[in-house]
Image 1 (spheres, rainbow, N blue to C red):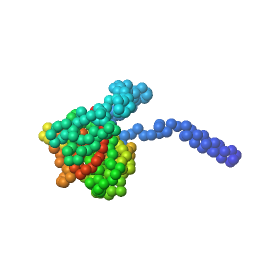
Image 2: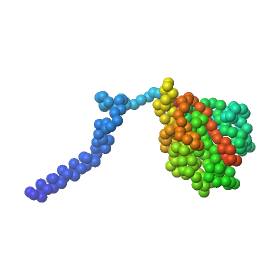
Image 3: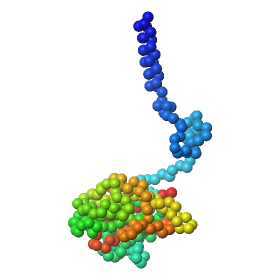
Image 4: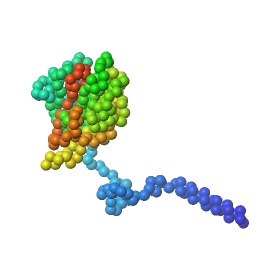
Length: 272
């Protein structure tokens, strides 16, 4: 009799375990919201799958490899054929940088920065750059340039290969504000890529900043800036400043020290 009772108990345990295994693990998750309350998920919980299905708005279709290899909804800023979309920063004149036969452009020393004629706010920006294969100088004087969002906020361009400098001014830093998460440069003379997601700052009617800009940067596919807060302008000397502004140009720097930096394949997608 005792053996029969033990056997029965063992069978019940096995059956209970099997029943437990067949329970959908999602059904066991608590539906109670902890901490953050999302208004769209309050009230009476839906009991049918179609009650949580959404069909509008339909996202636009984008060809990821459109004209010049840029997405079909991108604005191509430089395709190697001309400087038509650019001008000098100092006097808005025609660009005096060097247009190369390989579809790139190079900084012409001590001529000044260039910027796009078109102005932008929130963007996805793709840009490729290279430093010379023939290494000259060191520190901040080796292949130094910069990519400025809205003409004000700099992502540093620098040849850091075997070339130490202050880390908040090294390649892929947000200049003087954010150290990159990694140094992901290719060998000197090869082409680097920056893929940048930028959200512009916001200002109220009184000119006070109400939301900081943020920036995410992938350097050669490696995440080096992760939704970093831009605290203001990125000056060489002094604290960041926050002058109120609207949309602004993409600006490329002439560092003025025979940097010999080149750029190619520049396009931007405006974000909503």
